[in-house]
Length: 113
Length: 111
Image 1 (tube, chains in turn green, cyan):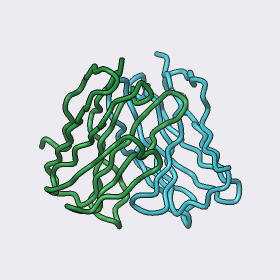
Image 2 (tube, rainbow over the protein chains, first blue to last red):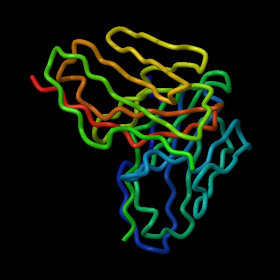
Image 3 (cartoon, each protein chain N blue to C red):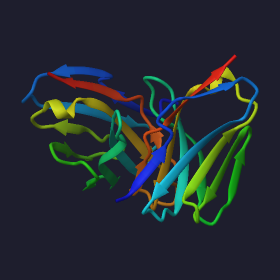
């Protein structure tokens, strides 16, 4: 029962570089989400996806790109990393629009120097 | 502006006592409220969901109340144990994508 896995767990990069955080779930959940967690802000939604090839912006989408070509994968790309994107990123999934429980991955800690 | 408030300071409680965590919100009318547990370096784990038309929900040693008039939820852990030590997040929701999280309260259960 692998659930939802994120990679890498830790990443250090430099300003201006492109970074991709991977998210894979084994439940075939329809909905997938990317959140970032920062001190004093709680979890904030970056992007979400209702199904393959359907994505939409959340609260803080600027500087991020997502895709969802397969139901089980939902990568998050920082096209040109900035220091303000230093954060812990969590991928989550939920079964359907009538089941609101979120299942989270273990997180990816990103540091942008 | 919309705001979710959880005690920013840590809550220390003696083992065996009931821990009560508070989630207050303003300028929201959520359809439901959730509580999650988060351990250091881990992702949040879902605990309980309570809908706007429900007053109380229980699961084992956990109890959640939801007062939409006071705009407040209380989260109780009875007979608390050191293993209950973690950060607890409150989340308000309106649908699958409209979920807003509080910043969490750190609970420390002292043996």
